[in-house]
Each structure stands twice: as structure tokens, then as C-alpha cells.
Length: 127
View 1 (cartoon, one colour):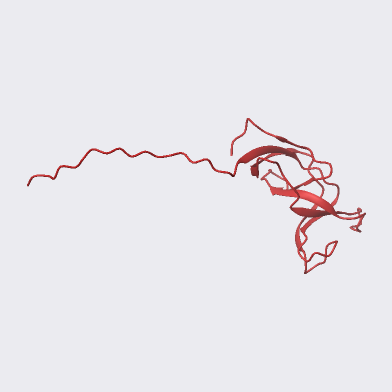
View 2 (cartoon, one colour):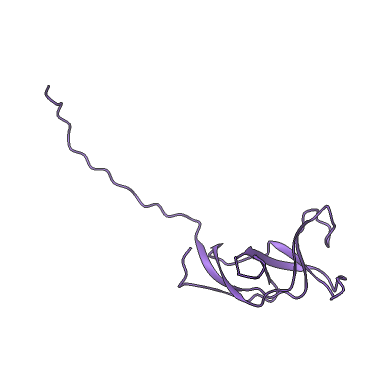
């Protein structure tokens, strides 16, 4: 059986720019003793059963590389309530950037103050 003649053709894959650009950032875990939470109910401060608790402790003081963050940089996505050694609230809660990174022997939950931001783009890291 003879094959039917087909006109030669070429296919091309086009690159289309994406508006979303993710970057790596060096971010300092720099919160004092306290606890982090998601403000869910819109009422200032943590209300058990209404806001979503994340973790407690003290920032580890380490600078971590966080990836998958928009190129404009990290932004507030949680709240932090500072506490005394006895666990009593110390001052008002404030906005923090919350992310997860595995660190041997430490919590994988990390928080960075937005008002005292210590984060820099990390051009040598990749997502």
C-alpha cells in the first residue's frame, strides 16, 4: 500500500512570559518569646477557638532561605503575640511573615517581624 503524501510542516513552541515571578529570600527568624496565629475573626488579639494558632516559642535567630515568594518580597501573613516567661501577653500583637523551613533540632515554623524586616533577595539561590 502506498502512503499518502503529506506536506512537510514544522511545529514551534512559543515562550510566553508569566506575570508571576517567584524569588528566593534570605529571611531572619527574629521574633521574641510569644506565639503566632492567623487572625481569622477580625477582632484584635488571639481568641482561642476563633483564630488559628500556629506555634509558640522564640525566634531561632537564624537567617533562612525561603523560596516561592513573590519578587516584591515577603509580606505580613500572620500575627505574633509577645509574652512574658510566665506566658502572659506582653504588649499588643503585630504583623509577621510566617514560613516553614526544616531545621534539624528546631521547629519548622519561623516568623519574621514586618516592622523590623530583615530580609534580602538571594540571587544565588533557585526555587
